[in-house]
Image 1 (spheres, rainbow, N blue to C red):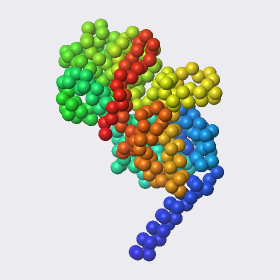
Image 2: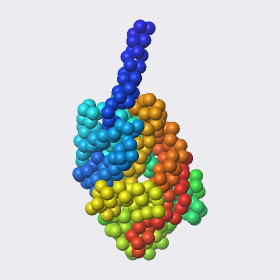
Image 3: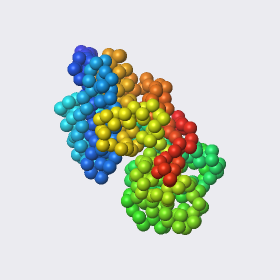
Length: 389
């Protein structure tokens, strides 16, 4: 038994050292990704993909990782969990990158057990899932910003400061995406002394929301937080609420705080608030935005605007590059080495794309509240950085 145990430990240590040294000896460092560049999420996926690739290629232009170039390997997952998981496994079998990026919460949850037990790669994705951000159960998964629960916490802190004891309602989709932060939001309302007066549920893309809007009026909601929608039925809810004379402030999390929503709603967006962890493309006073705009003018001259989905991809790439630099310096480019590098990030300057970041439990629990400027069709910050840790 003792000989078998020693042999097992020796083999395991040998495999670990081989993986770490193989990464250091390779001519290039591979970063894999499964992106939703076609399918119903492609409107965001193409920009997420561009942002991640641009951050990695920008790092290559600046010298790479101690002279080694990063090779970006991407396959389309079409926003279909089965296809995305198959693409993930294909890339791992063929290229064996130490870092992988995924296209959705569903994909992340599907591959998380094998990432922990088999693949052991640093993994990030489009998702802000609270479950994926559980570092104890998913030690290799990095959420590139605050979770959906953190976003609720940021908005609720803002409400509690602006109007203590306010009547709050949650308006979310009947999806995993929509339900994710609701239990945390309930607890936060209690802790902050806010009255959670209603929880309204609607279908993604639906327009028949009259009963939910009437319930908001009946329960005298003063603030409504949307979750689980990118566009519809948000405009319909706000329009009907205005038609009924409701004096309520509407708010959204990351996927509900974007220029496309402002373009769609027009004057209806007046007073709309949202939480965002990243700077916007039009905030030209921010150094990293200046750098991103210059890069796009050089490499993508036909691009006029980059949405927040691009910023999420780009920011994730920034963190990947910093992890690679730290792991390379430590002599360990394995997934475990990259996770150690990730967890060592404290007060790291990302050029203003966010405030200096500190990774806590494999996430970055902070964001700012923005308000819609209907005339300019932009979101403008109205709070400092708010943390939930």
